[in-house]
Length: 195
Length: 320
Image (cartoon, rainbow over all chains, first blue to last red; front, top):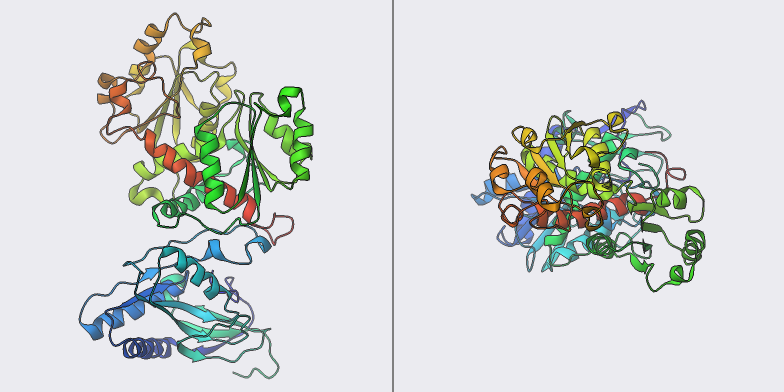
């Protein structure tokens, strides 16, 4: 839901896989270490995933972070539907669950999402977060940054930068949400898209 | 979901579950330090109340304000209606002011339908109670309250399949009973209406419910029991011999409550006549979810307004 470029139906277009399960896992491990390094540990960090695929990604990062830090770390979820700027353009959408593992006041909140494109989802997330409390800082971790920003927003932690054409779609599949093996693929036509 | 909410019967099972699931998420907003969402900023919701109401009007007003809509309250008293203005002219006036949703309560059955079907307003029409016809948001909040108590894990995503609900009292004049019978049936619950024969409507055989004249027969299997208000004007209208006799045969007291299963809950749409259809002991007991119904009412009405008003209408959007 958080990704405007998500294709939910079983696309008949050929899919070019750009990240397989192992590469996704390594990217998340690297992001985990980058978050810990930047914030001098996990003490102040609150991980919040943006539904739907940001939530399992945040959970995976929390698990890795717990392994490194030697304590249990829980992640949360932040639904941004009610804060979106395109609500009046589409029929009303179902809401997802918001839950924070901890108070966000004075914490460093790391937002986690699967694909960063226009930046509008993150703008909505910042507004939603502002209604929950006042974090000391907000950082952004994404699995894929595909460019095409429409707002002055950037990611602090990126799994993979993926230059794409607007006619292409980035398809993220995670075992938790999609019942298939983890994969990131590009769907859609671009001239000379050789596998 | 349709453009308007006029009858609980208009909702499919999936529509109803969607409203309840949305309400479950919105209930969390009431616990936050900032109890407001920006979703309906710049939209106008008109509360058009031709009949007295406290909780329904306040509930709709709170719901609209929590979604950041502008709220215009209109009550027939002190308005041009007392000078003889028609529903049509009132509606056209509101349309000229740009109402995105009209929440209407009217003493005549069918007034919301007239408002929605006549093309006097472009906004979504929400029935907040019309005559003795329907009160769909009350049924939704009742179903929401039952689901959160009776279904595992708070019931998100589920309906009320197989649950037994007993509704007791003045079914004849009750829009709450009518909407609940339709909605609870849609959600898969088994509804039993209990009332004296004089207070059951003609044609009740066509409703998807069982009926009984005996409250004591209908207690043991009930997962939820809903007591309807006996309206004051009915007390002297020969529907039953006396208030005392009604209370003895159809009132819920502690003895009767103790015969309900341990998990069963007691509902009342309010306002209560303590000592008439429900004793004070029962109303204040741990089984009673009457106060919770009010809290849930705001969340359910937020969900209805969100689903009806926030998005593009189905004709413009890309479906569903």
